[in-house]
Length: 457
Image (tube, rainbow, N blue to C red; front, side, top):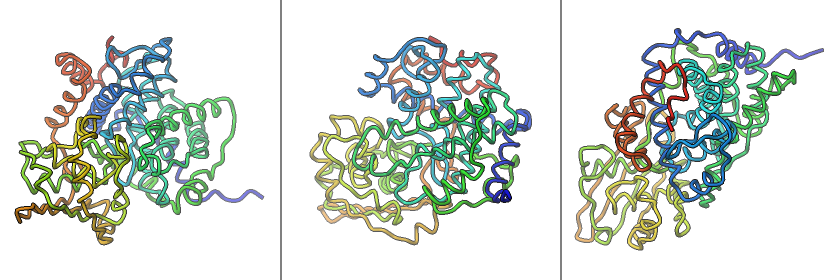
């Protein structure tokens, strides 16, 4: 006798029906505008990520057959599989990609495969954006529903089902195919670890590509008549990679509240758990008119010691990175704190090779003490709080606190500042006029008859 489906399996079925059945016009215009801004922000992050040395080597060796485009200078052509793969790596390379609490990065997982397929098939911007919103919705709901185990990183697992859902919607598949593909993709989720970024292993940047590969494969198999485990989500995320699944989070307020409306934007080139510390420091010293940059940077050698207060979860990022490792430095509260104090910002340039070689910054990082306050864990994700105290050798003490870093949905960034971030990132690879036109085109992507116009050669 066949057992009755679990509540989680039933909730996934309801989610699949929603993905397949909701009309694009049922999504509020404000949500579609917000989603277009997320797409634009992610484009800028990807274009800047394509300028890292390993990324440039990948571009030089890539195949040029196909109608999809790479997020790189000149927007080189590629097959949709290659574009999905490389663009996800580019987006992940600088730790500036947007995210949603708790905790994950839906756009980084969902956008590359959906964009690549939409370009390869010459689909409209409207259909692309609708599918993107729905794929984002699936991942956002899984992130809220699932409690991953402490050592499991959010990349390359919660996005599998989201990509499958987005691709299925883009291709107009019915609910049974959507569900089969979602469960099939969830069933092969990856056990990615925080150990990779802590150690500085740059292959961490490739973990989001796993969701694209799993989503493509699961949908292809579902189309061919393969079946999937209807209990994949409770099995994988309730027992293997996670410890529980809140079934209600998968369907609560479905069609009324949209995950993409609650995302956050990054302005520091670091892991998100470092951001409230950096914002607390900017608050302590004053900003230069932008909330993520100090008005002036103190001399690192004038600082005797720094103490930061963070959640117990964030305190795990207390390592000193291996010399020269940009990724590990971006996941180090101690190093990122020292970098911000030395440069006045924690942007991409603060983690370039010359900056990483500055002995003053590494010396200051060794003088940063981390205090873990478990009470802050209870506040998260509604309040992402941290504090900082800087003691100077002359006896001065400067303190600051942050409840939610700038760009958080509780402390939202302005359109002006997000555009400024985009132009700074994309402008590192494109002429200023081209970057400005691209920003305008991306914000208007909903009205493009052919999504290939997003990436002109």
